[in-house]
Image 1 (cartoon, rainbow, N blue to C red):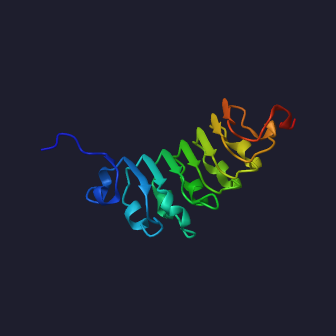
Image 2 (tube, rainbow, N blue to C red; image 1 turned 90 degrees about the vertical axis):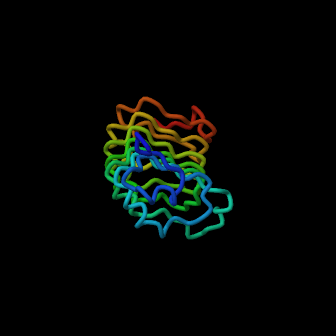
Image 3 (cartoon, helix red, strand yellow; image 1 turned 135 degrees about the vertical axis):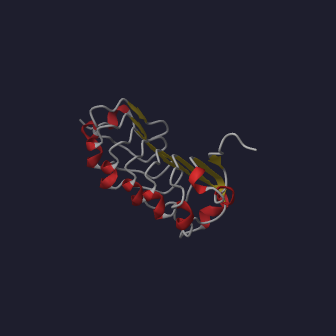
Length: 184
């Protein structure tokens, strides 16, 4: 007999039995494409934390996608997407208005869409270990953004005028930036 409902799950097969109980889903070292799993993801109506990390064998999938139905999860606050074979930023993420923390790390993304500013509640944005070479001008509109992680990117210069006034932290470790690369 369980006194507490299980709320943390580590596989889709485990959580599908009680999808409404799932508050945290950690899919680590996945070896398959998730693009056809939208119907399953749309059942996670109470999901607050989503962590997905790819197994290196998945890097060969040119058609890899995450289900766009994730954008319909109204309680989702945190997303970690690690080492997924993204070529472009999954723009549907900008529809998750409840999102406060977003990390996308280890991919081929080189730009962030202007629509990133639609994430009104986002406090932490980490786009790391990717081909990012430019920040959108709309970043300045993100008034709740406090922390920006740009580690291991291909950014070579930054315009401080792009940053929201309340931004408190920028992490540039491993980037190509140097003090003399900042525009004023």
